[in-house]
Length: 224
Ligand SMILES: [Zn+2]
Image (cartoon, rainbow, N blue to C red; front, side):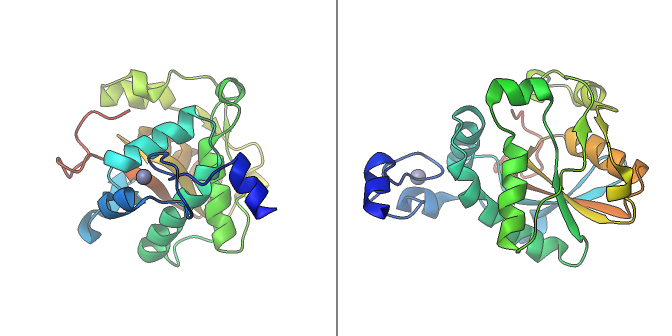
């Protein structure tokens, strides 16, 4: 069965898409993954200074991988990427959360794209810890793609109050790890985290696969 599957779906590098003999990471990507240094592994976001664990800079193979995940409907990549989110979150935020959730996309975007990449990443991350990611948020209105806005203030306004908690009873008193793929200005994560707190969550920390450019080291460069 494995052999037949390999013929139909030959193993590929989760980041650059190169065909592989085996495994899910090519040696090139493996040697050039832009890990964030320990001192930059946690970014504070939003007015509430949510702690966000960031595995990689948004650069090189990680940029390729995330674009492929978003636009290629290649959900298998999320299994590989989740390993890095799980590791960084465990290292940086251990003991700070007892539930895992994700930043949802709007129904319209979900329909256009066919899946919700943050949800996949959260589900795979939770699976690695032997728990389940719980949907807690709903996007209440369609917003412009954050990537179409370069100004941080515009980004903040675009997503402000765009998230709601349909079932506050499932949120109250719990401490959430909120997962997304990329953190740019943090306004999306921050808006979603605010909604969880307003619904009675006891705390929110965040984790993303990537954020910031390697050369600037502070996430200040333009990002998708
Ligand atoms: Zn590769």
